[in-house]
Image 1 (cartoon, helix red, strand yellow):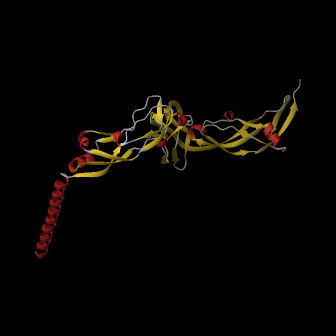
Image 2: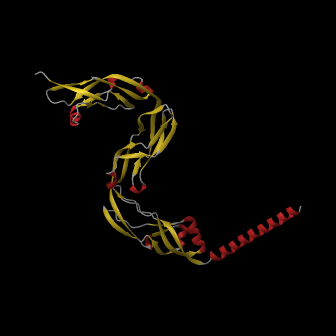
Image 3: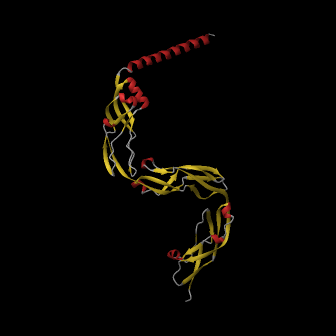
Length: 317
């Protein structure tokens, strides 16, 4: 019982302290709202709209800092609604220029018209470069990483829809761009084909506009399969004029690895194996290395034999 009374008394004292504090704040507020004060505030910067064929090479600062004067209530209203902005005067012509700003460039609206702008503190000037705005179409490239479960593999490259997008911006930047990349995304423990939408990314400092900014993607994931393929014929290419050539042995074997649907139907007729005679001769050896052209979605390994003899024969005229 004594504990409850003590708790009740503490709670009453706590409420009295809160009420006293709120009353003091109210009295302070009523006093200051009648006074006139100077205050440093921020305001957004709004650059005038550019002509369709021109663009700023770099972003303008987003906020200005200024000293203002007004009654307490008016300043409070400004801090709540921010009804002011700095509108610098930009001359839209190609090339560099220095934009000077003063307090006269601050535009007030609504309740903010009751305050006075005493001084623009920052920025006071800004060197800008205006460039020609150009547009072109570039390819979409992937930053999506798929990590299949053990025993599964990623088949082919990702497919995007659309697979190209329009980029627009300063000519000096757009001319250097040949692709736009997706956001980085990691998909783990995958054993089925994947699909979805993903945003495209560009550096905000480069003033690049994208259209569209999202693309659909899909990529096949299949169960991993490997098989050995034998008796793949070898051609000798780029032989001297008037000379024919053949390799000994005349065939090779290898292990093909990839998605089950691709590897199951793969045959030796789809695999191009060859010896590039001038490249091999430059090595100065009697044994020649064979090359195998890559196939989409297929990896080759364990090629046997690794080196071959080449027999040259002069063609009959």
